[in-house]
Length: 194
Image (tube, rainbow, N blue to C red; front, side, top):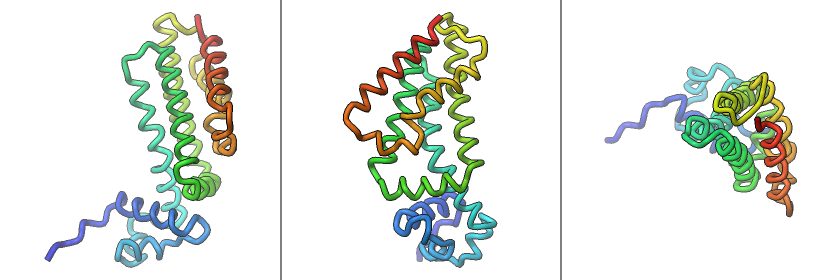
């Protein structure tokens, strides 16, 4: 007789994501997650003390997929300008796919991000930290001019928000959005050049 895989936080988060996909944020419960795992809801609560903690963890997991993918660009060997372009295009692409590939799940996570502001703030801090590293490299290489790379990174993040802030998701599939992105990207890069 095969034994079930041990219950880990990761397995709980996978099941939670599937329950959210099926039921949406408003109807998904810890009991639903436990049922999907074949355990009692008390067992889930041993890993995540509250429903809010579970929802925050699954939100973080969803957001981390983007920041982890982008981290590889930051540590890559491209010159800073190419790296910045690649990173911003990667962020836009990731957000477009999240919104377009599974609109129901994206809507669910939009609700979850609104109720988990701390998780979102940490995600934004991680993303702007990645941008800061790219801009610092550009300054060190003489490609970018910035007296305060962290401030410049936040400005770049804010200037490109139309292409990654979920409130703009309805615009991401409109005609001309790619051309608009390239125009903003070109302007941003020109503004950073030494």
